[in-house]
Amino acid sequence: MTSMKRRIFLKGSLATGAAGMAISAGLLTPRMVLAAWPKSAFEASTVDDAVKGLFGSSTLTGSDKIKIKAPDIAENGAVVPISVTTDIADIESISVVVEKNSSPLTASFILGAGTEGYVSTRIKMGKTSSVIAVVKSGDKLYSTGKEVKVTIGGCGG
Image (cartoon, rainbow, N blue to C red; front, side, top):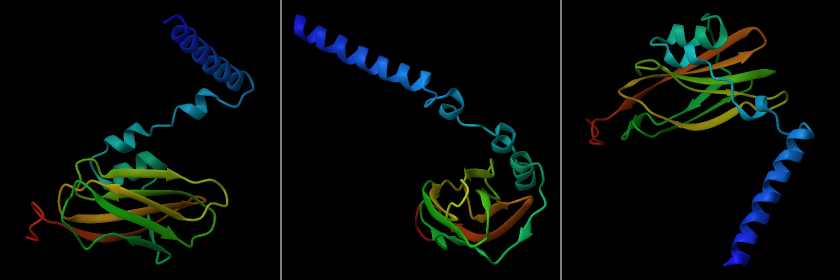
């Protein structure tokens, strides 16, 4: 029994020491641990308010360089797989907005410099709606959309 307590103590001490070393070396900072949360964008009830809360502007420019891959008919609105790809240079972020959701902003991804313009996720849709991809590059916002039909109970109706 005593050897088990000693092992638990040693494991805890080792983990605490490693975390302390990472913090003191600057490898782990609160800014890296806590994600920035655009609260006003996620609480918005319209597409324009969500985009404005996220980027400070709701002026979108249509682009054929953005592709959304999503099912034409989603039989389960709780899990709709989508992916967004773009050839636009110097992209900073890709966001996904669902027009008729009670909270339109479903996801926002901040990408590092030189990152390939591709994200894939699963979103929740309450009803048939337009899915809009918003790509930020420099000071401009580009977008494209796709209509996704959500069936009731997966019956195709």
